[in-house]
Image 1 (tube, one colour):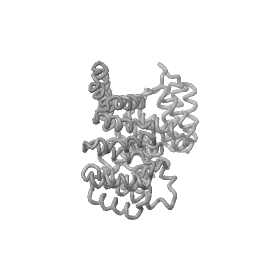
Image 2 (image 1 turned 90 degrees about the horizontal axis):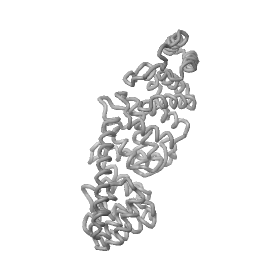
Image 3 (image 1 turned 180 degrees about the vertical axis):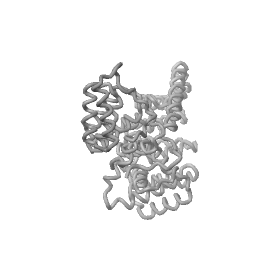
Image 4 (image 1 turned 120 degrees about the vertical axis):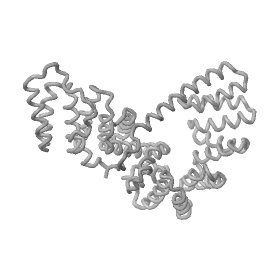
Length: 391
């Protein structure tokens, strides 16, 4: 699952001219250094890769602050499958210029090839946050690899949100469908790790999720129904369909969430969906057992504490509500929702100073989240031409 060679060719040809490398750090470069810069560029342009690599290394020995040199050395090494050396070059570049998204993107792609997945995901997310200019190929590769790693680390909703951009561009390649299917079915694997016997299931779920994300609702509904008909006893099949139904057909969604609990008795998200649906309906007594079971199954799930605390609050069991919501805040101190409901609980208990502090924290975190969300939409957004993941 490496980046397509044309991506590296594009980068080496100057496709990242808008990055704005600082160049050499020397006030007046030596004649030897100037000559090496010219020779390295000529070797690179003539596709004499080995010569170019050696010349860039020589130049960097003379001036380790030569940012452009680290960039070209890293991309040349990457194209030769020398991912460890390439990542080291990009790390040197990031130390010199820490605000360049493309550097972190290539570091992350190197890490992916080295199977250093946790570090790779951090670098890819940093790249998206910093921005990648107008390079649609690099944007797509970064988004795709970040998404499949999010799935591997069980961040399924975030993975689907990242993959949604491909669906909105009507990119339904097999790679995209596999990735979407794994995320929709909450299977913590990379596409390359899918067992052959699971491939049909994953692709069907991926196609349904693709239609859902691209707003082809009738097609999505048909494929989700086919999915639950063909694989009724497979974990997360009913859950995926229920999530699709939740907004417009909540009664049907509720039945599939309950069916998912039968199929997968340890399913915490399904229990939370049921609890939140009952809260929405004002059936707080019905919400409590599902929220409590979610807490028992996963005591560190802050959303479970949120659901149980809210149910207790609406039932007038204020002390229990505060206990659950405070625990939830401890588990997720960056969650504005937790502070919002905790502020309500404090107010109901007459603890007005605590309520004021919780409300202020809610406003701060909510404002921060909104600003980050707008930034993410600006980074790696829809391009004029469909952006495809690597082949």
